[in-house]
Amino acid sequence: MAGEGEKKPVLEMVQADGADEGCVTFVLHDEDHTLGNSLRYMVMKNADVEFCGYSITHPSESKINFRIQTRGGIPATEPLRKGLNDLSDVCQHVLNTFQVRFCILEIGRSRCELTS
Image (cartoon, rainbow, N blue to C red):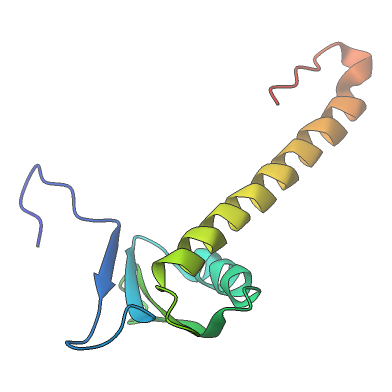
């Protein structure tokens, strides 16, 4: 447990002794179903992933146990990293699309400032 002034880790890797790198549970702190389900969807799109799922340990805890099992000896960290990057790209696209549409609505008021 992190003491006062120490930051607790955002992500932990939990791996059984003797298990290969392709079967890992990641613990994501301060997250909920919003990230869990979105990330699970993005990771499952990867053909190298055999299984991906998550669980919330208890409703009063804000952490996710996120499990990835891969095929062919690929480390589970690779599809996790790709899934996070892909999800970030999708979120950026949604934000950019929203800003453009909002700008179109506001163009008559001369308040259009795109930051893309």
